Image 1 (cartoon, rainbow, N blue to C red):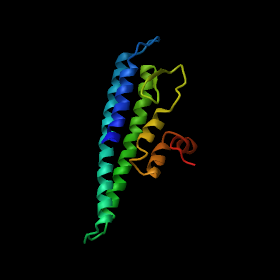
Image 2 (image 1 turned 180 degrees about the horizontal axis):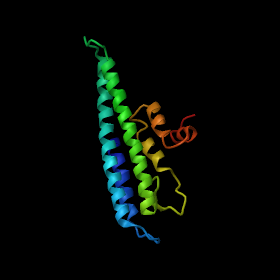
Image 3 (image 1 turned 45 degrees about the horizontal axis):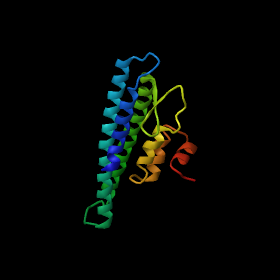
Image 4 (image 1 turned 120 degrees about the vertical axis):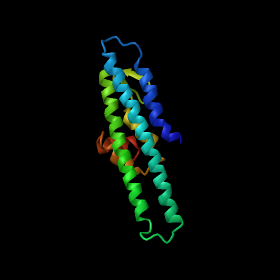
Amino acid sequence: MKYVDSIVRVALSGALALFVVSARAVDWDSCADDLDRLKRAARDASDKANEVKSAAEELENCKRYPSSEYDGCRSKASSYQSAVSDLESELSTVDSRIRSARSSCGYSLGGTGTAVRTTRQPTENPMCELYRSYKDKLPLEYLVKACMQSMSEAECKKCLNQR
């Protein structure tokens, strides 16, 4: 359950940190709206991560304890693939919402969940941190695929410590 809450924690801690006093003019209504959208997207992604976890457990149980099901474990595998696809879509939405919040609030979410002014370069890619938080929870191939929606293959491999 810890990994499921990590998306929400990063989004919420980043959202709170974004309200630190800014030297430049910011449309705070737009900022608040984008942060609300980010919070909802993070919750949706968290729900999808739970669905992936459940589907993965069902598939594993099917493989471990075969039954007389007509299709073997194909339906479980299909459900798992569908859940992973849905999660990838939700993670893409989270990525989009983070970019919107960065822009409207005048800050960039740092890798530690702290706010960094956009005039400074963040030391870590926040999406990389998000993908890393799922590294031991989801199959690496799916993380790389999801990662490549927001970064290059080389950046994803570096982020996920692949060779």
